[in-house]
Length: 126
Ligand SMILES: Cc1cc2nc3c(=O)[nH]c(=O)nc-3n(C[C@H](O)[C@H](O)[C@H](O)COP(=O)(O)OP(=O)(O)OC[C@H]3O[C@@H](n4cnc5c(N)ncnc54)[C@H](O)[C@@H]3O)c2cc1C
Image (cartoon, rainbow, N blue to C red; front, side, top):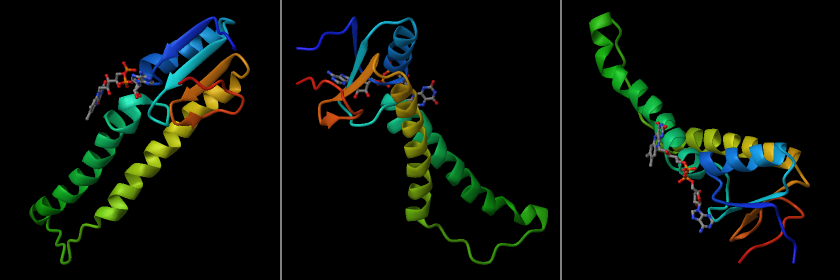
């Protein structure tokens, strides 16, 4: 069985930073993440997606206040699919960015997922 100097459970902001820093210091590190993507609550379902959707919502809400500026909007529409797609792209781009940082640190840093391997050559933990 493969062994590591350090196994970090969770690939959120805390776990990712700890794992990358330990790898930078020369340790062989495994980071185990059950979600299937790095970034944890913050990147996948918390801070980032909520702010992406808040930005879109704020732009939509602003349309109601434009009359005071003398700006008329005749056809206000909201395409929820596009809004969610924008949010998903932001989340996807950022999670790929963290995965790239992990890949750069191979073979010292492996990422394992309960769903399967997230980074090639990673040891699977059950
Ligand atoms: C809606 C929302 C909005 C937020 N907005 C902000 C904000 O604007 N600013 C801010 O600073 N903070 C915000 N937060 C808080 C922020 O998300 C957390 O503080 C941050 O994610 C904590 O990071 P963490 O690494 O400690 O834990 P997490 O991000 O929760 O990461 C832990 C990871 O460990 C994994 N895990 C847990 N147990 C296991 C296991 N046994 N095996 C494998 N994997 C496991 C989980 O799947 C998870 O991905 C928000 C949170 C929410 C819910």
